Length: 219
Image (cartoon, rainbow, N blue to C red; front, side, top):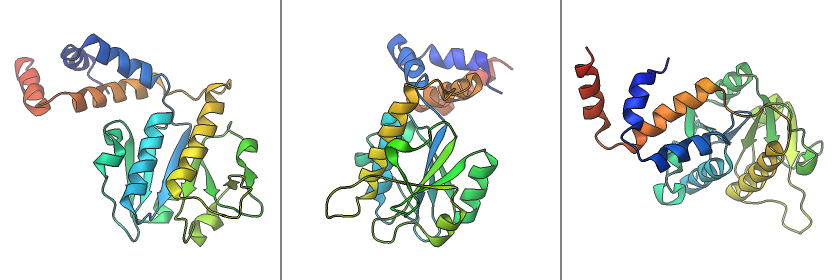
């Protein structure tokens, strides 16, 4: 439960333009889609996909770390780590289980023979889109548990794209279509308030001292 009085207290520290920017950005954020990355070795790819999520409005990024632990390349992420929620999982199965319990269908992005072309993908269902490496692709476990397959149409000799490029193409496409649809894709009021609190805290230096001062004065 968000302490609205505390949120108002913190937001008064911000400029009016900053507060308005938060509200404007949050109005275009969604949890209707989420992205999952499976054991991506190159950390710059994780950071680049996070940046695409932030730029195009996807709030949740899921990182599976069965083999490789990720850290964020801040130069590539360009501050996106402050505005996107990163959920980390030690196993593929735990990630898939969590996402399915949240109501997402599992979509494997792969040139699968039964794959749906990007422009034909049904955006009406909440979906978790899984990405693997360009060398190995997604694991057999993800493929076996997937509810559907999605592929980018290609007309050249090269049959694969770098993961960060693939993710950017797909995210931009589905988010553009989502914004033009009648689907209720926006964050809930409670989710917006939660993000306003988190982003405001992320924007204030010495937040611990300010928080302690606020609660000490209100005891």
